Image (cartoon, rainbow, N blue to C red; front, side, top):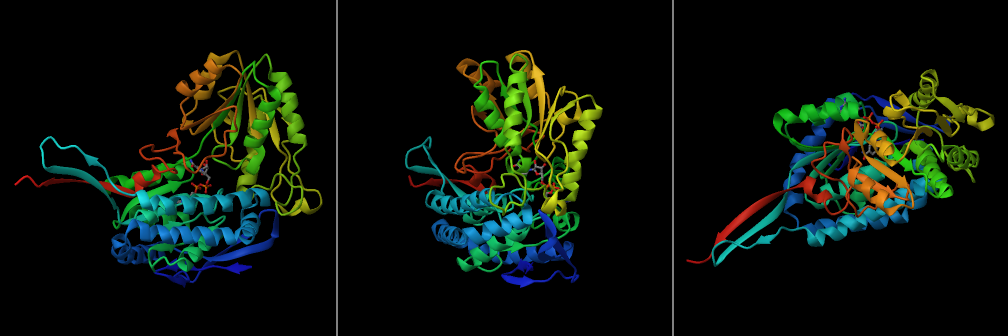
Length: 485
Ligand code: NAD
């Protein structure tokens, strides 16, 4: 079992209370993966103070010098890819292939923002008068807090940390308690890459106590959160009174529309990857398939074949294509949602049960699940099920498909499978989401492109990822300079 401490002011320290907690392997809960400090508000306070002290020195460095640290970190992460991926799988449960991809993504994110350092600047703007210079410059904000979820335990901390740090901010991060190891590993790597002490601080522990302190501490000037709507919405309210900058990225209920002209083999393949891949534990996972009733039966048959081909098991084992749910609570929640749907009149098309034969008995495994006969007002059609459960809703034509797709409170990602370019383009115009894919999976993002939701999926004032990620972590100052006299 690994042992991690909080990382505060460049030192690895225990929680002030001395308390600890452990993570278990969700594929085999007999295995303890790591032990962490069970921190409280006082530890978060100390981390904010350390960040505040380190901020001026880091902010005074040039972006290029800061970028060098990130680029070095990228190399170190890449060189440790196999070891990090294995630890990620043991703690969070996704397959080794999925974990390896996520670690590579993290190395790429640090390389991307290391490169961005060369272009971090402002804009010159023509002035009304001659011999006047009018320009903008970008400045870091100060102490920025990051609160992250468990489902991409290395990529999400990275896609917040890299733009925050290259912009010159000092950071306190609180990773989710289900899978904090990867954030600690990033901290180790950044320290080795030359990040000055106190610029990055990591505090593990109770969400309410640690996260609550970060949300209310007057020295935290901006907070970027990814997680559930319930918590994100609450933190947003805590930031508002002091006008701290807020970026809340939350859940989705992502639709894939399958039109009657679609290539149904392609549609089944895309839906299976986007719905069952990563055990359905992606914020962009397809959880609603809105299919034209003319092709619903044929599509469903093909999707069942895809589900049957999935091998559920320990993500470290050869041939396994779907791992467990991250913990008992998520696992039970997934199974409960299937029961609720059936009670509301939906019908079980495939799966729906716990898998507990042999080695699976010690993990949180369930079958990839397809629920048919779903109507838009059922809970399974409206609420996020963070697991391998796909709801099929039959509709009559494109207009109804669009109406159903937009008929939820959230709007993160969406996909459409069709050969009709006009309908595809109308969908991209009219669907209320942040990311729309045509003939592609609803999951999977290019790190160089903006990402974020709309409606209740996001506070939607700043995007993450891509070059625009810098906007959240910097403020623009406008300079007027008259050299006419
Ligand atoms: P969560 O909201 O339960 O937890 C997120 C983080 O908030 C964790 O670090 C947690 O410890 C912390 N937290 C808990 N209570 C808190 C409090 N009272 N104050 C401050 N912080 C607190 O979410 P989760 O279960 O870790 O993640 C799953 C959710 O994240 C899903 O809804 C998923 O859709 C969403 N998600 C969204 C995106 C996106 O980019 N939009 C990406 C990944 C996951």
